[in-house]
Length: 241
Image (cartoon, rainbow, N blue to C red; front, side, top):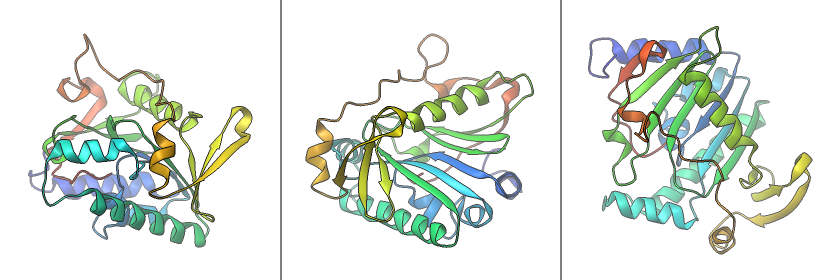
């Protein structure tokens, strides 16, 4: 459904509510503010009903965050504002954890590729263009099929690979530190999460995963989705999760 179509947003929101209840929300994004912290965000009410969440966000103190915001060239959206939005997302996840939700948060420091939300048998997808705000990009909804093939499975495994990468540290919600782990999840080192982390992150290797393209090197947002695409929306969201 296009987002401006009658009742489209209501239909999509009902789908998210149904798929999110009693499940673990899995998501990749940037600051997470528009989805996690905003009371009218896409997942704000879903998070209250889920059993847990696995969230991957951009490290707001990394050079990648500064480069991304500079590329968008929005004078009203600064690095400092982005950092504040990330902090609000962290506070929300801490509150969810305090009421018994199983919540985990990781920060990556390579350029954002896709905004991805997985709820049960449905997956919401948007592509981060290197120079454009994500509000200009279309949103796709992919549905899992019983044959375990198609774009849903492809992007589900992409999330699993990103989440399991040893190069992406986990945020300790108790100590406000980034925890780097090696094989068998053995802890290797901890670094403070904050402005001082920017120096440390420069030397951390970026993810070894290749860029996702479909067909002959074309971006995912330009491809027809086939039978896997149940809905398409022209989401006017901010450059947030």
